[in-house]
Amino acid sequence: MIPWVFHWWPAETDIALKREEFRDDRCVADMDAAFDYLAGMDSVDENRIGTIGHCWGGRVSWLHACHNPNYKALITLYGGRIKLGMGDGATPPMQMAGNIPCPVMGIFGDEDQNPSPEDVADLDAALTDAGVPHEFHLYDGAGHGFQDFVNPEQYRERQVKDA
Image (spheres, rainbow, N blue to C red):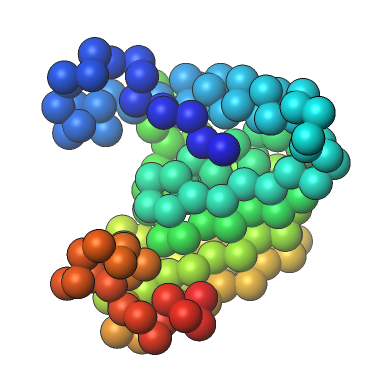
C-alpha cells in the first residue's frame, strides 16, 4: 500500500514540478501513516508486512524501509533515483542501506537509464557492504517500465514472466 505521495501539491500542478520539489521527509511521513493504517487492520498480520513498488514507488519502498524497522520484505522494480536525496539536506536512500531490516529483491532492465546498470551495481554494492540479504535480477533487452503491459513499446513479455 503506497499512498499518493504527490498530494502535497494541487492536483493540477505539473508532475515535473512535483518531482522537482519532492521531499523525502514528507514521503516518509506519508508511508508511516500508510504502514500504521495497514498494520492496524484486523485482516492484516502486522508482523508480515512487506513493501513493493515500481519506478518511483520502488524508490519510495526503499526509502521507507530505511526508516521502518518492521518490514519483512522489500521489492524494488526498476526504482530510480535511489542514489539521490530529495529535499533540503535529505540523505540519499542508498546511503541508508544498512537501515533496511529485511531481505531485498530488485528487478531491473539492462537498457534502463534510471536506474542504469551502473546504478544497479552501486545499489548491489551498498546492500552487500551493509550486510543486507538481497537478490537482484537484471534483464537483457529490457528498459524502464518493461512490465507495463499497456505500453507495447516497453513491455517485454519473456522478461516479465521470468520476473
